[in-house]
Amino acid sequence: MGIIYRGFKNAFRNSIRTVSITFILALSIAMALIMFLSLKTVQSKIDEVKSSVGNTITVSPAGIRGFEGGGELLTNTTATTISKIENVSGITKTISARLSADTDTNLESSVEAGSFGRRQMESENQNNSQMNENMPENFSMPINATGTSNLDSTTSLNISELNIISGTKFDESSSKYVALIGKNLAEKNDLAVSSTFTAWDKSIKVVGIFDSGNNFSNAGILMPIKTVQVLSDQENEINSIIVEVSSIDNISNVETAIKEKLGDDVDTVSSQDATEQTTSSLENIKTISLYSLIGAVIAGSVIILLTMIMIVRERRREIGVLKAIGASNLKIVSQFISESTLLTLMGSVLGIILGFAFSNPILKVLINNSTSSTTSGAGQAGGPGGLGGEGGRQMMRMAGEFLGRAGDSLQNLQAVVDYKIILYGLGAAIIIAIIGSIIPSFIISKIRPAEIMRTE
Image 1 (tube, rainbow, N blue to C red):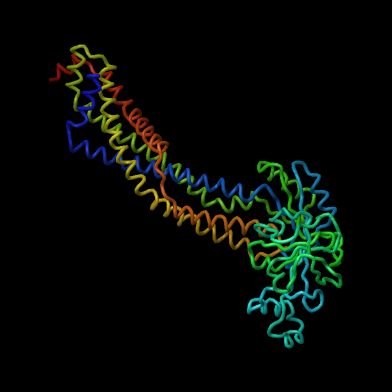
Image 2 (tube, rainbow, N blue to C red):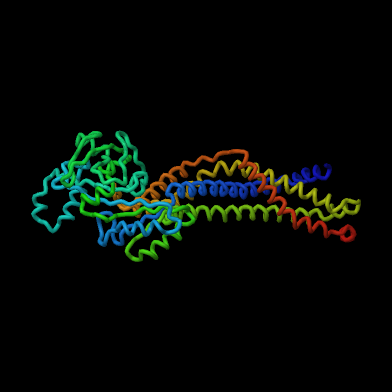
């Protein structure tokens, strides 16, 4: 007990040095704590992004994006080939078509054309000068009809959720003339459950009304895939296939197998691709935080190491006297370790206070500098989305939106002080104290009382 007491007392023999060392150590421990909080926060966000995107691969016809591009649609045979690949747990097939209010349906779109819609229509019909000249001011936008084999696959439907607010779902495997109608489209055309409307000269029964949380999607129609294939003269054809993989670890292998079997006939976008793009900046922050954490711990260790070496050199005569009167190396070393531990703990207390005080500003700077470009890139990758659009673009868009929300939540991060964080800080302090005392302890063990006395 006397050795430890003397060690604590020695820590205050030079008040200026004690204050300086405590403050410098506090800065390094504060930085280590901030970087540790950054690691935990960013890793949590990465896990959220990965869980939100899921274990899926979107397969689309090569060269086709929604209703644009060129190439050949997929077929039911393509879907069967994919379903037989190892680690594929399920597939969802979709086919989309546009219903023109003038020729294909008696419905009126709930989406106002506006200047953007008019430009789209004029661009599509630029070779038909008579149509452009006679285009009315308030023409009705086309209505997207999507045939699906799985209503539970929101990614394939290019929506974030499917909430049936009235009626029920239809049997996806049937070929009946039934449909789910978006709530905006239903309100625009005074449709309710059991109402009927005309599409491709056939009477279609409304079995349910849905809300997807998106105005564009709520202006669309969902039908069994076989029904849309037959009515739109796209029998046996598929716009997009969402492949469910048994595990996120198997996504890369399954995507490779799809490309090997189908070659250049398809384009693929996996949730792993979306996740990697979305989390790339977060991974950068994680790397910076890790290296900074290691650097802060090393800096603290070097500071206490140099301090204790200096103290040992100053007290060589005192160490020699203690050894001469019978003090063992262990007792003397314990005294210096106690001194270094007290200095480090004082620095830790101040460092923990500074760490929590400055964690939010530093985290905000890291997030602002690292996520803005990724959020922008992910949003651009998504492109314009709508019911029945290509699932891969929707996957990327949803990932980009999620990162945007993650960035907002990170910018509003509030450091939570709990006993675990404090214990981590104190644990780091003890490690720093031990590392910083190793070499001084070795120096102490080499000091010989006779040599000290002879030089005095």
